[in-house]
Image (tube, rainbow, N blue to C red; front, side, top):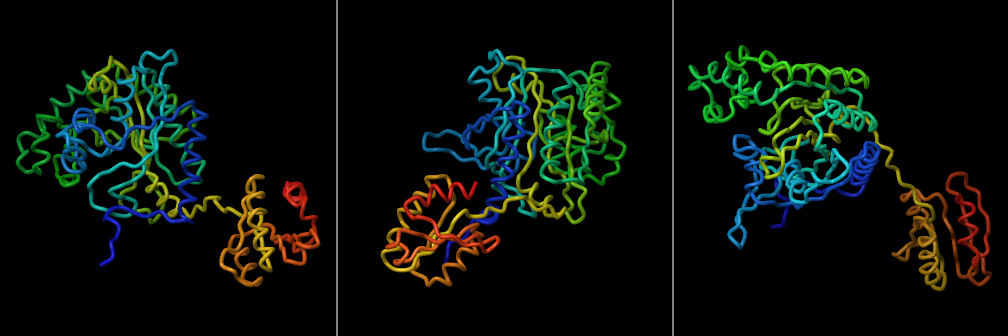
Amino acid sequence: MSIQIPRGTQDILPGESEKWQYIEKKAREICERYQYREIRTPIFEHTELFLRGVGDTTDIVQKEMYSFTDRGGREITLRPEGTASTVRSFVEHKMFGLPTQPVKLYYMGPMFRYERPQAGRFRQFVQFGIEAMGSSDPAVDAEVISLAMSFYKELGLNKLKLVINSLGDKESRKAHRDALIAHFQPRIGEFCRDCQSRLEKNPMRILDCKADRDHELMKTAPSIIDYLNDASREYFSKVQQYLAAIGIEFEVDPNLVRGLDYYNHTAFEIMSNAEGFGAITTLCGGGRYNGLVEEIGGPETPGIGFALSIERLLSALNAEGVELPVEQKMDCYLVSLGEQAQDYTVGLLHQLRAAGFSAERDYLGRKIKAQFKAADRFQAKYVAVLGDDELAANKIALKSMEDGTQMDLPLNSFIQKFTELAK
């Protein structure tokens, strides 16, 4: 029996991988403009990091983590998201002491969650995310959101919806928490086991439950907006003011609850309204996490960030019919006729590549017609034809595949002449 790929993973083949490269390049370009610098963390971490950083009441920790015990008896987990690892590194390397604050970081790499595979969702997926740590200015919240929106729009997405909410500060969260417990407790037995266990630990997570989302108590649950204190209201008002100043449209959704325990104040999601995108419309999610750095052992440090799935992004691009400009034409294909000419093109091919050109030659001993067909498949701009007779005469024939013009060039100065023509 042949060995097949594990469920929930995918092979990204040539023809598709170029799209990924284009998206990754765009992500790096926009992060450079916003002054976010790349951080690379391990693919696996100590399990405790995610228990403390992500939260033990989340679906990720309770149901989706790939965890194992290594040979040293240590509990290890493949990272299910990027924020906890980034914050761990921020604390471990004392980046809170750097002279430039806030510290602005981005990451891009594979994450792992054991969940039911579906369109645009995999058990191994690639996440792009940013984190800004060290400032409690609501303008940073607007900047983080604007980076995400700009990234999507510059890739060609138009059917986007930004939804924001405030989860409040500690005081507001406590008041809302008490109200939620009082609301759900009399009938908590009607809810799923997850909701029952979350009632005392983190009742706000009940609002994010998919199993009980149609329960009548969900519709009448206390809204966090009604429990925001003056400071939280002012903060949320500033975020909205700055988004309006940037020109970003948004909707306030008091029922928006992010799936991770560490969020407070601003929470947001970017969704696709494209027809046929699917039932799950969320493309990107993020928010502020003041308190997470302390939870992982660092000093009191405010932070905010977002994360998005490249797979979901590709699905949204397909839904909107966006074609990424990833066509890669070859500069020159070498066609050879005769044994001596074939031998000579080995060195000539290397010279073309060393001069900075993308080039290829035939490796299968095919006839001239088949070699020209190969040049067409590679979308070569030029074809250089060298036969044994041309080799003896120190010349090579160059044909433009765009307009069909041909010329003979001196073989010993071909690289120089081709460079002038190509430019």
